[in-house]
Length: 92
Image 1 (cartoon, one colour):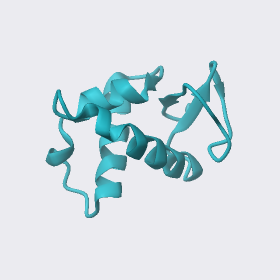
Image 2 (tube, helix red, strand yellow; image 1 turned 135 degrees about the vertical axis):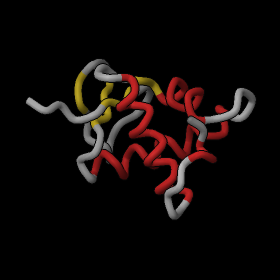
Image 3 (cartoon, rainbow, N blue to C red; image 1 turned 120 degrees about the vertical axis):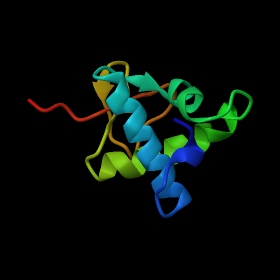
């Protein structure tokens, strides 16, 4: 699936939908931003999505649609630095 395949109404909504789709297809676990970018962008364009993915991930985490992890633990979406991974909320 590419970002262009998404039919959401805005670029941010389109990216959010693409991120959630990639995580759903991954079926559990977490993915890094580069892994998600590779899954939704053309081979030579993935790096341009890293900052937009981070911004969109924060929005999705605040809405409860995904979880941001650092060192294997959930973090505050408004206050994290460095390497992070994304995952869907657990249904425990």
